[in-house]
Length: 223
Image (cartoon, rainbow, N blue to C red):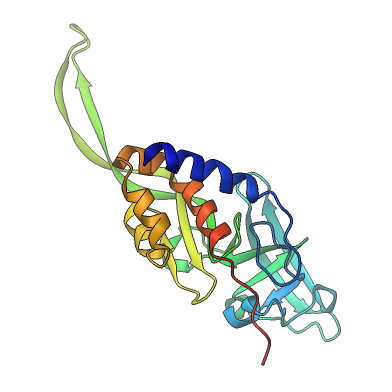
């Protein structure tokens, strides 16, 4: 079963390079450029606001693919547009979605690019979280520790998240959640469960690629 699963991953990873046309949301699907006020606008690939109609002050970090929108105004009237009303946007075909304020320590509205598009979309962002770290105090004369313990300290981590293209649900990209999200593909799930926990963790993202290739999703028609 493990040999089969390895071939399974390899074969579908190659198929992911094939170009998909039409309304199928492939992993590199280019969305129409513009601003989405609602998740449903993203599903239909129908931006609510064109970039040509607004003046925006936008800062993007090319290393993290995070974007901060400092200000947004209608070009004709100069009236400000509430950034809180924005669900996401697309630039150069790449969509970015707003990270909920309670999930990130940044003070300004922050948007993360969807690095993988499909039935399950994937995105990441760095953030600072409190974590337990081991510390020790050393005797300067002997060089040996005389006190050790764990303390809470802020540490930068890479947050990995999933977005369901069908429902808009967000979840952490981890083994427990991923197994639940791919339960509708019983064949793939069965193969994945045959792996050891360490192998599952190692092949987690590759299996996501396979799932999206096997379970195609299309943009919805605008009502």
